Image (cartoon, rainbow, N blue to C red):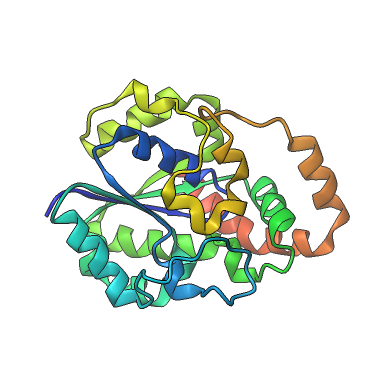
Length: 242
């Protein structure tokens, strides 16, 4: 089996633009949120676009698709832990067979960004708690602190953060993978409306929207309650950022 990298994210964490770096590399087969096929369907209330009806819809079948792909080439998959939390918590063999990386973003910005696309988002979909649960499973499984990236560090200095990630994964750092054409990769088509900014980007940048995010956050009691619930899990993981 070739190398498999699992990037475990929460929604609106800049995980998709980090995924784009692996798409640009060309040496990994890249899967975009494969376990979402088990969590949602084309009829779910969450906004979706070009649904792939041919993709497996059970945890076991999705996992097998990833493992089969890794028999052919290195694999990179990005997903949300809350998509498959209960199955993932007990599947230590799957976690142990890959390099697991976590990406987190300051909760105000990610929650506001999430709210702009899907105002009816449920509590668990914010995603930090589920991430932290898998973080703890891996820490116990390996005896080591899992690798954590803060998305704000990534936006501030992409080359430094990605170079360190490549060192951790023992793969070559490829500067050419840090820039790209404005386009929608095939992997994103099912969730295209979520990735407009990433689709129209040419590299990783730090958007200047913090004041707008804070203004909306301060006006919405629901957003504050989501923040209060998930903030402690963000802080626990952020203490171990690389």
